Image (cartoon, rainbow, N blue to C red):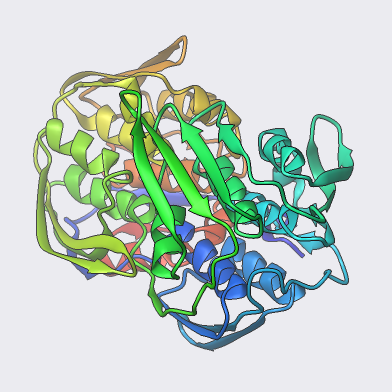
Length: 445
């Protein structure tokens, strides 16, 4: 039973005292999904700590089990996966139900696509709306077959993996870590080399984790902003421990809250600082945010650091389109920061936001207007004229967790309280959001 069928639970955020304290947000979602998938594909026992235990990731754990891995929860965020190794997957008995997990479903399609097994992928109403054709096209070139699909290449999809996976060179039509990862994961069970060519670099978590588990991966520059990534097939992946860093996309919410609530001073611990994920921090610093990066270190192949964030004045800036891939999930919360910044902020090239859980671009605009903020969309650009934020409205979330959290953060600093129509889906990505914010002194309820 997915939480989405539950009765909507409106939440209200009110202006209160300044925020203070140290906190560690949940583990990164991208790394959490991948640690379970690589555990499945490795020989031996993979110990994972800091795993994000949101609904999306738990669906990936269920899928890894269904494909033959022994997956066990040992304690909070501590999991153990005994894998079957590449080529050792078993055909799942039932449907692989991914709930709302776009990442989990798409990466696992890559895994299944490269193995001679058949599996049916499905999810909730929101996942069923999301296009999967971009993932299926390269997998078909590699020898997989789409047995059945809903209209427009959507779930439910039955995928018959390749009997003999063909290595390919594939140029992705858009910058997408999910397409790239699906192809590389399928390529693990192909002879020779599988290559993905990107004209615009996307998140590189899969490449980093492939190396961490012992695969041979090469990454070369391609054009001005692109990369050419090659994986050598049939590696012996060896189980390795994974420490999941704190999710920068989740850290974005308390981070922006501390910037806009006067007098705030907080420390976010162990946040992933992978350069392809720090677009928001870079942008906020350009806006004049007081963010200090402390104790940089490496964990599980990823760069991490502690962030000290203090409230101050922000100014409007122009955010270039080429930054979008490194912060595509952070635009809703950036729009909230922009609402409190002096002057105009222009966020360019947000086409990808139209194909997320909802048309996130329209949803952000509607929420800003409900809060009395002057904003508009011009083409694929979002323009926010900041300064005064009256608040006092209700933001429609469209079952989108990031929209819900963004407008609750806005309500912590707006003149009047801000309501979101439903907060139940926050559990899919950041189940502890409300209690953690309470711990800093926020008034949300």
